[in-house]
Image 1 (tube, rainbow, N blue to C red):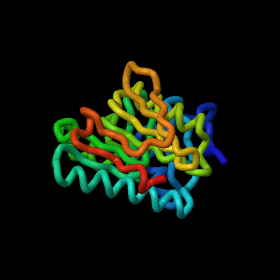
Image 2 (spheres, helix red, strand yellow):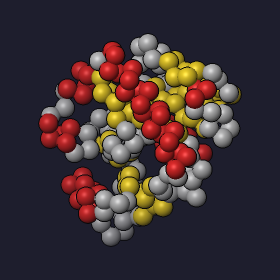
Image 3 (cartoon, one colour):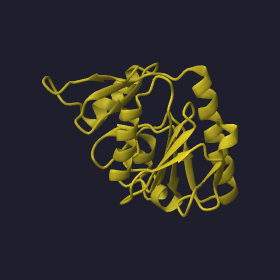
Image 4 (tube, helix red, strand yellow):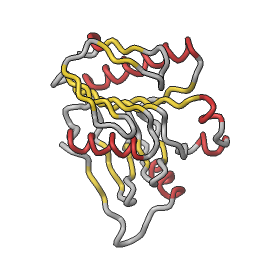
Length: 191
């Protein structure tokens, strides 16, 4: 099953404030918005995917508490990208200096910033093609490193600006490279 896209364009365009109000008025529904202004109803994950999302987020939080280099965000955080899209990666991380450059009001709403790092965990309800396009959108909007994990295929796609997507089949671990210094994700606990 793929996400449901609601096209509002023939009738009206949602402002940032209206999008926020739609989200607040429907707290049981997860929304994103693409760069065309279309509203995307995101399918909730099942229990199995939820377990692995929690494990992944925890590993980033533990690393970040040790290094204190930035902030980790879970899948409920929606970021406004420079192209106007509002996206919620499964895990995101932003360097302290970039996060601290935002105003309190920007931090409280949908932060108008592309994370430095994003991770998407492909769930059974996700379309691989749509998720790959989302990963490319992140990179095109300033994300420095992105990982797309496909547990079923035991495959990882690594996205970096200006480079071809690197595909790894059944890797043991992933390095955070220079974006997440010292971070190593042991994938044996995810597969």
